[in-house]
Image (cartoon, rainbow, N blue to C red; front, side, top):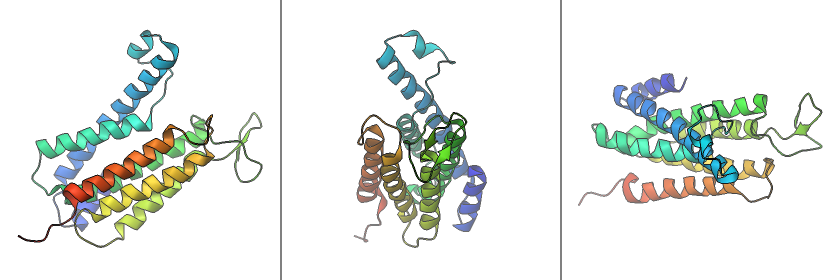
Length: 214
């Protein structure tokens, strides 16, 4: 679905679809690898068992922090490798599609209970063992998709849609984290949301916003 969205957005924006499609593919592979490596490192840091690092079947899961790191580095690599299309215009195509894929992946967490929410007495999901939990993954997925829709309807200079979807995701993630099953109310997920927002704003200020002619 994300790749089809890239082609659609490229054609809508009057751009070539090959470079955004290749960029999304490279970023997706790097994000998955980064998410797995980050999780394995966290697992090793807790258990101090070095064998977990090299075991592909280690039950460590995937980390969104590692996914953002890997995907971000891949975007920089794609800019260096391809570089034919203006980077701001490229991100307007790639980021909405990438965040859409991330939202759909989060929905799987609701069914698999791999990243559950806190126990709740009101709206929530009841699992076979009787636990009634906030659907953290559904909150994050729905909010992220809403951010994508808002961004795609936003008009402005190249790069504006990329900024809107990034800040929208950061805001949604920040709020959704308060329903997550975590040992403290403020934890690593909030740091991820803050870093996504900071990187998005920093990119816009340094490289994204249009400059007046000299």
